[in-house]
Amino acid sequence: MLDEKFSKVVNMDGDGSEPQSTIMVPLDLDSVSSDSPDTVDELAMELATIQQSSKKIAVIGSRNLAITHQQIIETLVTALAMQGNTIITSGGSSGTNAAAIRGAMKADANKLKVILPQTIGQQPSDVQDQLIGVPNIIEHPDRAMMTLADASRVCNREIIDDCNQLICFLSHTSKTLHSAIEYAEEGHKVITAFYLD
Image 1 (cartoon, rainbow, N blue to C red):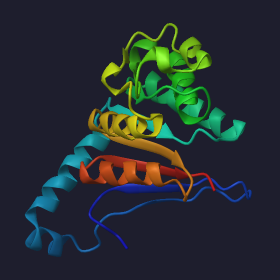
Image 2: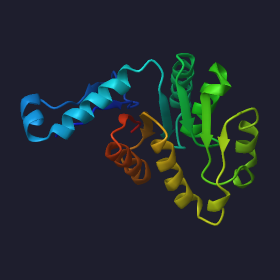
Image 3: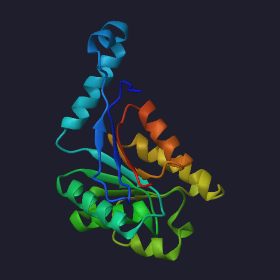
Image 4: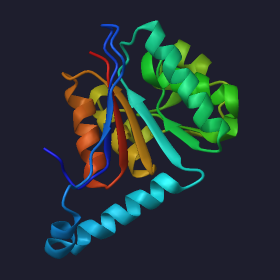
């Protein structure tokens, strides 16, 4: 079913097939404009976001990624940061966040913003090591007593609130990341979801 939001979905199966992408837009723009003028305004805002020369792009996703997927994320984020975009992600010793941090640091450390679910001291030592040299880190000592799962859900929302566009790497069974995408849709963000299964 098509909705009135721009959503690009890319399938990154390991089956050797070419990735397929689609952009979903309303088919009947006349009925959209006559029935819900707010939708036309939302579409105009999303088009303006896509056309901006530099954006705040959130990159979140699974921790359990094949090395090839991590390399793709790192390369993508390096290119996005080199184009002048600000990359927003969270801490992580492996997977999407770690690859995003490596990619942004290769391009321009000042184009990286890391929002932690809790504090640096609560991160594993390898995450703390990875964050050395990152100039823009947001910590949340107020979440120190929360479980990491709960703090991470709040953190994902904070990251999404701060961005224009969300890029998410996930599996079809990832409830937390699907919830993050739904939250981004409610906030009228431009969303690109890479399904890895």
